[in-house]
Length: 461
Image 1 (tube, helix red, strand yellow):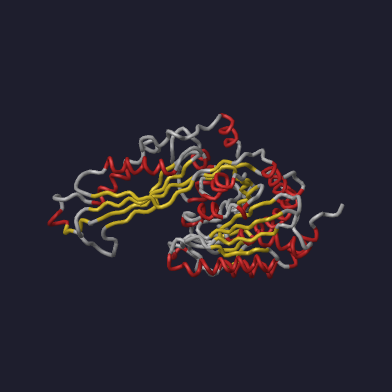
Image 2 (image 1 turned 135 degrees about the vertical axis):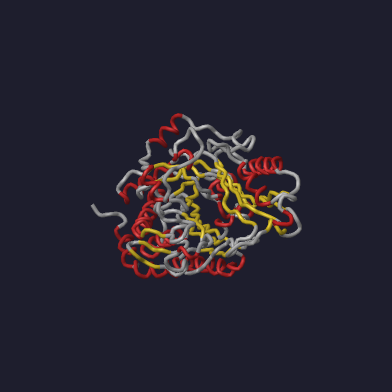
């Protein structure tokens, strides 16, 4: 029997070298959305994506202004009677620190041992690019897509998606669809194909502790004033109990308990805890007592210190009492937790434990709600069939600890079910030095998406 997608696979193979070169060009753009000095680069990446959409035959392409970095929109809507799908990804990337741990500069991509190494190779430029390739195969070989597609590529995902909700609200009319497909997730341990059904939300804040007007000589003032750095350490230590649970009053009030069935599903996942420890380079795991590592990693809320600074940090010694100290903290949140309420709880706790003699301020930086997708939705099941067909193994259903704010926004603002169909390997080192994407995941991701559009075309709207 003839393979129904043989011509599209042949096109993918015939254009492999040209496509890889284009992928590497995309990775060379330092589109770091969190750093204002890279705003022109973020814009350049948006224009890169927009031009590729136009080239492959997508219509109504627009580098749409948001008040921050733009959203790149485009559509192809000629499949009468077929479902309409929003395809989401993001073209911005994380900062690259610490730079000295990169084998090569992060925006000088290298191809080695079947991987592409560069910032954004996996998260998320590789997945944006494979969607462009899948659409190109359909449009160049057959002149049409089997379904209607609306592309929505964001430029602020790595800096909190601050303007996205407002843009979605303002563009409801041109975002009408049946389902959203978000490719900003990955496979399970061992590179097993997986569909992410749960994502945690995020609350990100900064704590500033200020004491004297300027740094003081510790010999002349030590013992006479409260030290902001010591005070900050005490505040941070108060955020957790000895058993790993968050100590902020009310933090767990809205947490939906895991059911016995959910815990059983998580326990059945093929997770090698020893290999996990070796991969991340620790000799012991730690977290909230009473829960497994996978439960703590994807289905329970957390509070972490992400950055900590203050006082003298140069070479040698400088005997001072620092005038101020600072910390960045974040909470990963689960279903039913409201980021705004969690911020208020954390802020109120920090201010309550703050002593006299210093001034303490807690500022919200960014937030996003959690998301949970039904396994039995037809679009989810269609994705699972395509993954199994291409990767040769049944897809696992997993919960991930990261946050993709747009998933909850698609559900809440547009009323759409969301399928998290991502292809990055679990050892991609996203957000870390030497980020990489497996080329077989990338190529087979294209094949999967090609078939997924065909599979969705056969489903009722």
